[in-house]
Image (cartoon, rainbow, N blue to C red):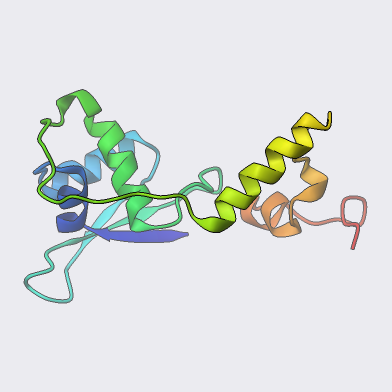
Length: 140
């Protein structure tokens, strides 16, 4: 599948100034290739980076994930440290807070959290990985 992110967005999110062609090289380095540059819809937007996400990279969902991987390939130690220009206040989402509380209570009761392939969807186990679904593995 293909995902896109503008070069301007990636640079602003990470806090770097990397040329578009260099980003294509970095994408190949982190197995998000072949990557290519597309023209932006507006002149202000700039070029758009289109990457090919392999089936083994289910963690790539949005442009933010592409930017994160480019930051890793660029090297976190190569990013200049600076104080952010904005102040933000973070907080945990209510659903995540409830999930964490339930997870802790269940663990205290002696249970162990396990996610087996049987609990994942057929799409996660087969379709997304390009594997055929056969009667021997399909329970539905």
